[in-house]
Structures are given as structure tokens and as C-alpha cells.
Amino acid sequence: NGGVFDRATADWLRRETGCSRIMVARSAIGNPWIFRDLQSDAPLPPPTLAEWCQVMEAQVRQMMLFYGDKGGLITARKLIHGYMKGRGFHHALRDQVCHLSTPEEFAAFLTTVRQAHPDRMPE
Image (cartoon, rainbow, N blue to C red; front, side, top):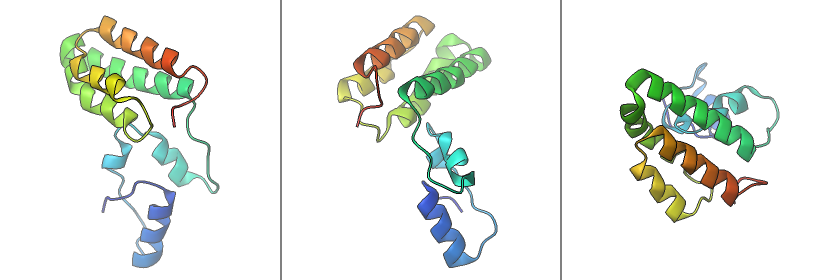
């Protein structure tokens, strides 16, 4: 029940408990690729920066449509932090997330992310 953050943990949980189903919870926050990875028979490459930005932007924009621009961005801050967690983004860039409250600020943030790491995800 939860605690699954990668394929190895899911495989271990199934093997050790004999369970037929696993639950993915916190690890999906900012990492929708976990579902793809768990269904694959072989390790998959991590998302590219372009894919990462595109998926995050689509999810945040849906939140803005549902909650309104400001409410959606305030609600999405935790999600955006989840997307950035453990991916090597500089602290100053992660700190900007706490202040996002308009679509223009979010667009500028994405531009900064893309410019900071134009060819790859940070390490």
C-alpha cells in the first residue's frame, strides 16, 4: 500500500508479499512517468527536458482552468515542486515556484527552465 517510487520497489513488493496489486501515490506527484515505467518489461529512459516541460505545463494549465489562474497556480506549486524534486535543479530556480501566481509568471518560469538546461535534464 504505497511506498512505490520505482520499478525495483514495485517488483520487490510483489515478490515479498505475493500481492497482485500495488498502490502508487506520492511518487506520482510530479512523476507521471512512473506508470509507464511500472508497465514496461525493460527500463525506459527518463523523460527529456522538452517532454518534462510539456507534461508539467499541460497539467498546470489544466489546474488553472479548473481552479482559475491564481488558485490553480497556488494549488500547482506543490505539484511543480514534485516535478523538480530530485532532478538536480538549482535551488534558486526551485525557489521561484513559491512565488508563481499568474500564467505569465509560470510561462517565464518555464522559459527559464528551458534556457537553464536546453539540451538535457539537469543531473
